[in-house]
Length: 166
Image (cartoon, rainbow, N blue to C red; front, top):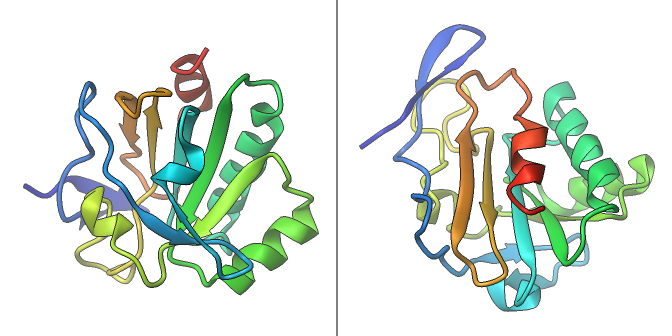
């Protein structure tokens, strides 16, 4: 069942709904800026905050990556994983320019993360990109918090996501 969100007030739909709290997150294959594939195994035993967004080249997406990077350094045994459909080269350029070194920024450009986590946008000019969402999983890969941001142009609730791993 699709989730209805908005893009500057216009109705947009994702292909489904976020994983339910209490469920186990699915494995994934995402690509880093060096074209290395990262999977769930790379983050085994850590709490995970997935900061999912359409493109790092938009102001709100860039702001969320910067905000989570700033907050991540104070978290124990926790990794922030930024996920978008951006090419790994663009993500690498952005992280280098912004000095983002407390987060993992990974691309779903050749993967199925968006479909597996049901955050792919199904219609509108953003069709095929990922919606703005946050999924937090504990060190055992159980979902402890989710937020499907209802307006793509809005930032996520950082404090709620961070509180879920404290």
